[in-house]
Amino acid sequence: MNELPTVDSTGRSPGGFKGEWRVPDAELARRVDMRGVRTMSVDPPGCVDVDDAVSVRRIRLDTRADVDADVDADAEVGYEVGVHIADVSHFVRPGSLLDLEARMRGTTVYLADGGRCDMLPALLSENVCSLLGGRERLAVSCVWTLDADR
Image (cartoon, rainbow, N blue to C red; front, side, top):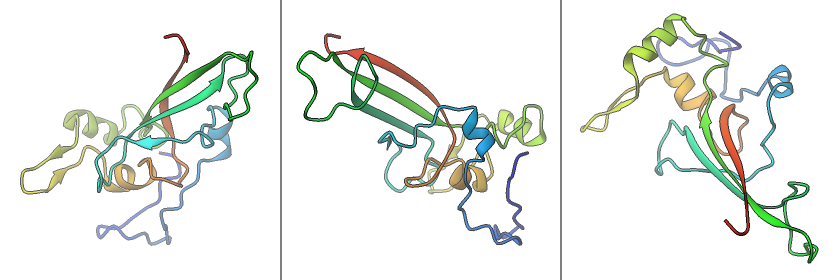
């Protein structure tokens, strides 16, 4: 696993991890940086494992730049729509015990009494992989462009 902070059975980190994990430069170099795109969670209020988000922005089709109020009259304008899912692959290696357990569980199960049986440990699902506002996180994104006519 990569750079996963260690925690004891109480969830505390002997190394003093405070939840301020940052995307390593090597990861940034191989991904599209979308930190400047306004993105909104689609998970319900109070959700601690924020793993789904969307983005929509008005763009110039020729440059893909954001459109401001003073767009050229002859510029073609469209929309960029993105769906973003929390990416755990930086921390969960294929075939690892964590991967095998997560595959066996398949999903997080929400119980009627308010409890949960998580697919992944809380350190991942609620912290370093959760798409929390104002924090750098990794995501798998599908982004497409729509012109104004469609």
